[in-house]
Image (cartoon, rainbow, N blue to C red; front, side, top):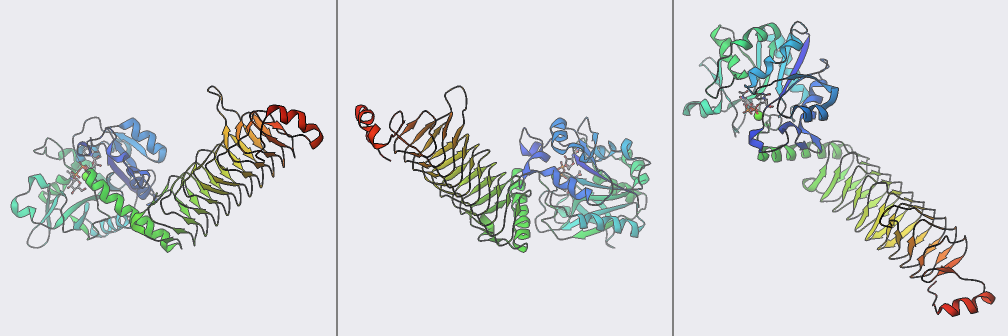
Amino acid sequence: MNLAVVILAAGESTRMKSELPKVLHPLAGRPMISYSVETAAQLGAGKPVLVVGHGLEQVREAVGDAVEYAVQEERLGTGHAVLQARPLLEGRCDTVLVCYGDMPLLAVETLRQLTVQQAASGSPVTILTLLARDPRGFGRVVRDAEGRVLAVVEEADCTAEQLAIAELNAGVYCFEASWLWEHLPRLPLSRKGEYYLTDIVGLAVAEGVEVATVTTDDETQCLGINTRVHLAEAERAMRQRINRRWMLEGVTLVDPETTYIDATVEIGPDTVIYPNTHLRGQTCIGRQCRIGPNCVLVDTVVGDRCQILLSVAEQARLEEEVDIGPFAHLRQGAHLARGVHMGNFGEVKNSYLGPGVKMGHFSYVGDATVGAEVNIGAGTITCNYDGVRKQRTVIEEGAFIGSDTMLVAPVRVGAGAKTGAGSVVTHDVPPGSLVYGVPARVKRKKEETSSEAGAGGETEHG
Ligand code: UD1
Ligand code: CA
């Protein structure tokens, strides 16, 4: 079988009431359409054809060259949309699978089943039908007394009797290509002024052709997203699918109902995720970590055996055995080396904290390089911004920064140096020395200090 897949995504998304095209609304952190594209690609049938219209440029930007594009200039219905793929596909394939870009939970096995049934039945058209309790506005599959499919009727066009039918049109179809191209232009205009792909079933029946079906009762897979209510339902279903996968991979989710993991995230085994934790984007977590409760990690890489409690991290990197929180905030470019401890109300941005650094309470470290085993006292601030430029602070290995020290950048604190509590450090601090005061000055050996320190009237808080 020479197969091609067509995904429809040109609709105006009226029911979403959104500036953003429907198929770009995110689901578990990725645009909805990316799921259909990926599922289609798994069939190994070459690049799927994506029919786009409304929000064309935005869709192109999000999907890139994973698909071939066909443009539907006017929104004239799902049948008309498929017709736009014809110039790309005619003569290139003998079987065409059609699905909708607003059904992100559809599984590749279901698509395969359709192609298998299509090949086995000898019918030029196979449709996926769904047995469901809640019709959710889907078209109804009308059969005759012998069980032969007669038509698919859109809900708005259903008689009272047809509305009661529990077999629904899921919105996935498999066609013999030449039959499809021949019949698409013959679709009748619907009451709504559109050419419905579903009416192709009626055309087949009128020609005495039996329509083949594959039937499922998996409502989750067939969730079609037309409104934001559906979007929330799909999000929930996707979340359950993702969480289940990670639990089976050896990750403990204390409460899967309140654990929000994007489809793009990776997590190592024996990690425990506590409730109300959000793992987003390209976040990657190692083994044996404890994350949460109440954490938000975005595009953050976490090594093995880390602990993160009630904290937020964006574009940060934690090596192994880092322990942060509660209430830590790591921003873009924060890199915490092995064994760093960061306590409450700290913020780190665009800085490297070397192995074993301790930063227990209320500190801001921005645009800094901090060597191994440095102790950062409570309330320390790197004053990195003078109103015009950002400047760097360097604190060398083993330094001890006293409580409430202001490090006015650019500035360097030498290895093993100390700053007194409350110092405002405006000049580089020599290695091994002690500075104190406002502005901070070097404390001299006993014989030199009497005149200098005494004259300034300053007290030492070393
Ligand atoms: C459609 C089916 C319905 C089925 C349901 C399942 C039709 C007429 N109806 O209804 O039987 O039960 O899906 O989810 O097919 N699109 C275009 N161009 C258009 C119109 C739509 O590309 O001119 C795209 C949309 O972007 C969307 C898909 O086709 O991805 C389906 O359109 P939508 O308006 O969502 O159809 P439903 O009302 O859900
Ligand atoms: Ca739909």
